[in-house]
Amino acid sequence: MEQALLDFIEQQYGNVEIAQKFPIPCISALAEVAFQERVAKLPRRCVYPFCMRLVGQSGAGKTTQLLPAVESVFQQTNVSPVFLAVRNFVHYHPHLEAIRQQYGENLLRENTNAFALSLLVLVFEKCVQKRYPIVFEVTLQSPLFEAYIHALLEKNAYACDYQCLAIAKKDSDAWIQARYLATRRQVSLKSAQFFFETLNPALKFLQTIRLPNRFFIWNRYQLGPDVSFCQDPLLLEKVEGARLENNRSAFEEDILREAKKQFLCRFYEQHPIVYKLNS
Image (cartoon, rainbow, N blue to C red):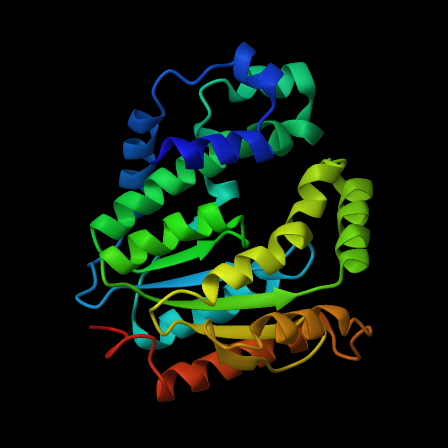
């Protein structure tokens, strides 16, 4: 991983006190362990590899709506991807229990985000180099981050579709607050605001890429998406429109989730992400 990317992750998500008190001696060794555990039960790699990127702010529904929907696509096509999300890598921190005891459970994720995201990127690199199909549940970051991820995908001939679940900031903030009241898990103001600050710069970068990656724009409260391409000159306007259309849905969560499953299964049956999704 490039030092500039490590510096970005540490600057955006790191905690100087945590880094000084609980240094990581060799994150590359941890990455190899994490990689082997993530792929241990996967049956095969892809001749035509692909990445499904799930993006959206906290509370949009990446985990509760988009993830079950894309899982249905893979089940339908008999593909077993590597699932990568920041939450998958927190437990690899060698000082996890000490951090939990000293700072409390409610700050555990906030205090380990930089480590977990760095480890995730290192594992992502290994998965790409070995040509595994990937579900990458990491929301849009700075152009520096996006350029690094895209360069890896392009170098290794990956197709990549983006599933973007748009949500207004006030709704995201309300969801973070509701989660805090229920679980006491804290999220810093810096982290909560970052997605909305970097959304347009990240989308502008995606408009410059050469690969014909598709971009699915889901409104948080609607049943179906707008299917576009990263190079769409109106991409920013479309995402912003979906983000601001924040009327509360008349549909229950299970109906929204089922609609996403049905749409994506039909779509990928007719328009595979690669030449043959299960090749």
